[in-house]
Amino acid sequence: MTTRLVCPGSFDPVTMGHLDVIRRAAVLADEVVVAVLHNPAKAGAFPVSDRIAFIEQATADLPGVRAAAYAGRLIVDVCRELDATALLKGLRSESDYAYEVPMAQMNRALTGIETVFLQGDPALAHVSSSLVKEVAGLGGDVSGMVPDAVRDALLARRPRRD
Ligand code: PNS
Image 1 (cartoon, rainbow, N blue to C red):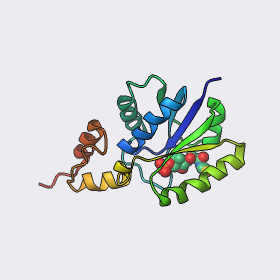
Image 2: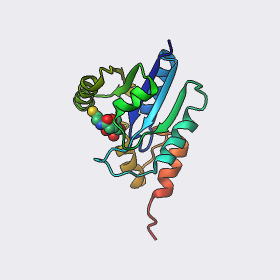
Image 3: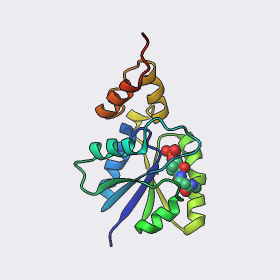
């Protein structure tokens, strides 16, 4: 039986924290599908096609990992379509736990799909897509928090100040 984990998120943009969880999951499962979904509660910084390209580039050495867009879909329907074994999420903190558990319970109530959680690398506990965007947008150095291509794209988005 093929074990297939579906890792959903906005990935706007992908961070080293996401990539650490994806890499560790790739050892545990035959396939990891990174499902890029639009979260209506969050304004998007990067187009979904760019988010996917960043993930593909950063996971090119992992043959079992792929990324795809699933806009406007329930994640449980995506899991059914992909014949997923389980959902995959990373947890950095108690606030992540409080955010993720209701979604995991809702998804399990809808179709019985389980969610497996990997604890985030403590060295990356401060890294989130939203903070990285804020810091980079104000000129801070986010090297090592996101892939270099993402850092460069964040720098290119900065408004000119002249
Ligand atoms: O990275 P995010 O923004 O925290 O990810 C949230 C996401 C995209 C995983 C969540 O909003 C989601 O699963 N959206 C798909 C639609 C859906 O199934 N909603 C019900 C979730 S219980």
